[in-house]
Length: 124
Image 1 (tube, rainbow, N blue to C red):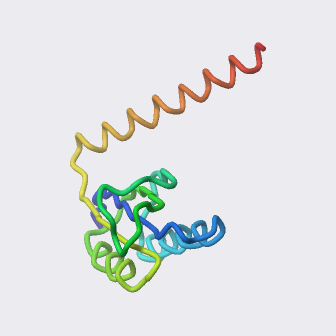
Image 2 (cartoon, rainbow, N blue to C red):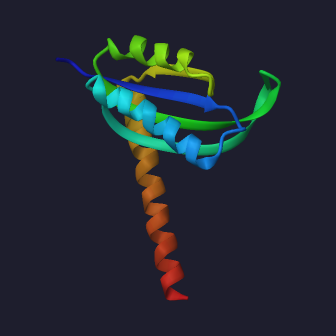
């Protein structure tokens, strides 16, 4: 079975508590795992201002999930997004080899930065 690389971004309504946000993100990760996806990376962007109001809300909680999965998973995932009233917007994008390389480079750079910050705080 051939696995494609995907990235999905979903925006949750800002009225949710931290626990509800965590539960919702875990729900979508479980849907991915149950359908044979391998989650590569989850990035919580947190509360961000929206470019335009959605359902009379001006901000939302962003989460990005990068995963490898068969192509059939996208339809199932988007159906679950539409069914969940906590999701204001969503998108699922197939990544090419350049996007995958860029994401790996970005993650490596962030992890190097965290290691450097930890070393400087220990020195103080």
